[in-house]
Length: 358
Image (cartoon, rainbow, N blue to C red):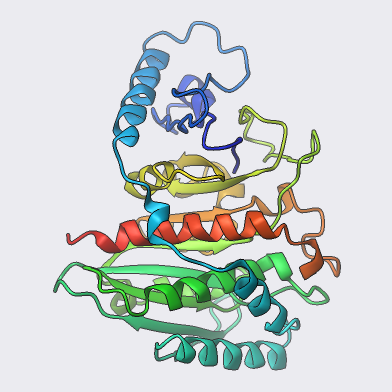
């Protein structure tokens, strides 16, 4: 998970290119909005990797050329920072207990109704060590029969004792704002908004969802929002998974990370097309993330396992936010400008996915 400053920086799995054939030849660069070209490789002494590096460089240049000609997707998204924060303030803070999660479901149903959507409660049973719970779902149809469905998701539960402003209040509120935004906009594909229960308990809600053939049917893209409100500008404030030795070309945590499954690169490609004030660092993850467990820590993972195109948008969670899973995860600590721009990036990605007709 990770990136750089102002739509610039490189991204990739270069070390995996050179070291592990299990990960395959994948390198997906970020685009440079400052210097006018792609930034350099992530720091590290790779030596002479021969043809693999040459191929990676070719893919890097090709994506830069492709992305440079694409539209500004952010133009499609209108969100208000004050409205997002107001929704975050009204969100129930106890989202761990049975009673707290039930109150949150009522909150979500009312918010979806206000947006012009009809909410449905989908209960699921306990399976193995995963508890049961209730997902909240709403759908707006598309205009082209057979074009499929775009799923926008966020988990609504939290850990005991934490108000969960970033985890995952920001994801919840962003999804609600985008549900309202797209509720009356005709698009080729249908939009399905899903608030997953029991993510903190083994991804139970999303796992249960992907066990249903009916609910998986027609899914063309899944966009999961998980912690969108933390930003830091102190050297060393951003940490990384132990098994991910490459780094973005920045010491700060001021970017949005997007993780995509390598078998379906289109969603990640679209994320890298989005030009705006917020940098995006993308990671294309082979083998459904099984070789890098830290990339599977949210509700996108069951969709990856099911072979469905899915991306996770995140501020990288506890790799940046030291208040993660604690009583200090409060609204006062949310980086409001970052949160707004991250939500707009999510909206731009949803807009692009909804516009497809096949």
